[in-house]
Length: 97
Image (cartoon, rainbow, N blue to C red; front, top):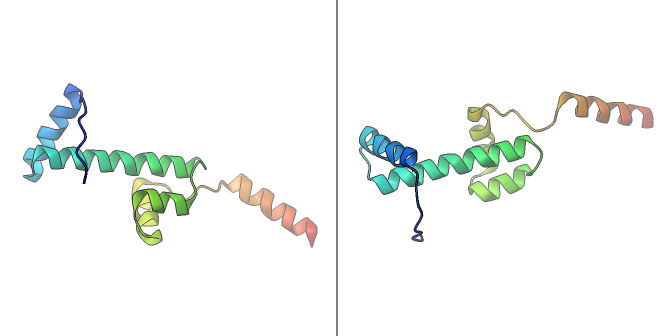
């Protein structure tokens, strides 16, 4: 693990203290926890919007495929293929038959 020096807002500091107190962990651990949650959310939204493949999301999060899919489901993301795209794809496929 590397050491980085950052400036944090008052809001983040309050959140760190709150999490520290609630979970009985050090403030540095609470900041890492917040950073991880932010990373997971960011990657999940990028995947949902088609900016990341599932494979790349797994790689960034350092999780297995199933762990990543379960995380996305917990966040409320079922996939990144929209119904319209699926219908269009099926329509093109059926015309080729």
